Length: 220
Length: 241
Image (cartoon, rainbow over all chains, first blue to last red; front, side, top):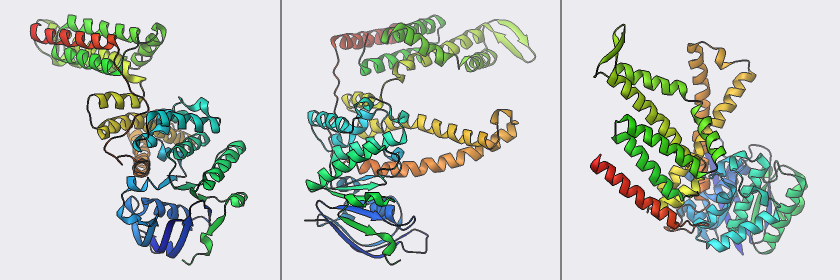
């Protein structure tokens, strides 16, 4: 089943001459793990921002073409509506931490989605145990390391569990054992039908993806 | 004694309001003593003492300045002494003392709320029927202030690494250095806020009118009792004092 389609997407940032995408077409099925590759400045992060609607709602630019989320036109949805289909992990975790305590951060999305408190508690316990970070539950988010912050954001996204996960350099700053656990969880979720877009520079992650988008080869 | 946040907020509001309403030295001292006692009762004695001490030790200059200004510019009562064009009167001294004690009291009583996570404020405000967006905004500001502080610290460190020590600069150069610091910090904050807003909505903020909460909070019998007592005492003071 197609969960995402981009048709003839054309985009450039405001007040900049060159188009980042001239005629981008791609689709993703449920269960896909898609690795987004490309040199710096080729539009990897921009692609994720277009899919989740940050472009053009928050970041201005000339955007044309169609973005369909489960056959629905994304351009007529607002960001909270899009959040029921898509979640994004940005490169900098500080942009995604709103609360002083880790537990509050983990619960926030689920609370917004009206998930009952008992279920939220269960999900928090499960994800913290899975990543072996139960000790962080009551820690202050400001005092966490870069890697720990990323783990918390990832955990929050897994608790939210939308159809499409957009992960921008998710393994950056993480320990090997944590990376293995994340990969295993991604594979597990994909087998349940979730779709992942993963932006990474390193070829070592090619093995986990069943599709690859190389933005170097797209016409500019 | 562990009190509910709503009870603490009511205590803080009542005590600060009484302090603002009454220009009386005895009442100010009573309120200060009450504030210190509440701090000691709220957590363990030693921690409370350390917290109050660490906050107040940064303030003597400011408290003294408040005292001087109030003393010199308030007229009335008998003249105690005069320096150049300024005369110090009994009323001026009294107001200086009142203002200084009031300021100290506000620092001490606010200490009751300092270590409480923002989510608890949101729950408390929700119980008082405040819109969630407003309580979230307040909580975000509380969360954002230390982050801004950190950014300023990092920028200062960057200046140190370039060999600029702000403490050793003249006032003019200090202002220049401050301007150099503040614009990048503001620019970064604006970008951060933009992405945070997007990220917030992409986690379902304001998706539905209502939301669930992982934790709820309920008032104990002691909380109810204290809230009623504070209400009665506050009303009595306002009517009869």
